Image (cartoon, rainbow, N blue to C red):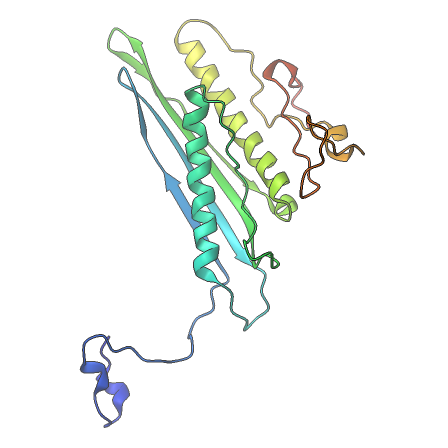
Length: 230
């Protein structure tokens, strides 16, 4: 970094290699976005391309600093995990991947929250006879209403991905001559009782450490066909 006009006739210390000014931070980051896009080769000339963009806002008061490095590190991990989960799903891997934003390790109040998320899914399928189909869908959602809860944010993202998969799988079914899949193309419903039930016991009889229960999503056959959801 060299800025001779700043020296004002003083010694040009900035001309030495590795010198940087020790000035007060001149900018205040109030928000940022992270995008992760990856194309997976699934074999037989087929590929899966999930992508996600996460817009984040800061909640710290004007003029106060926060750990921007750690904040971006957490959001970048969240983006990678969302994309990775789609490949695992297609491979039939039962591993559960957390899709929400992990809270700060320090235990302090989170200085950021997720404002909007865009998810995109493109899947190229080989139909044989040198034919292929590549359906792709993208959804944007404002998730501020669940941003305060990592578990609820996880559920919101899971529903968004399920909606994209339902649309993609229906197009593939039609292209293969099997007709419509009968899937529900909107956001899967959340049963009210799952969110407000008084019991917080897990299957093993022990309550979760954070008191949060993440309800299982309904199966495709149980999703409403009238487009209504809670």
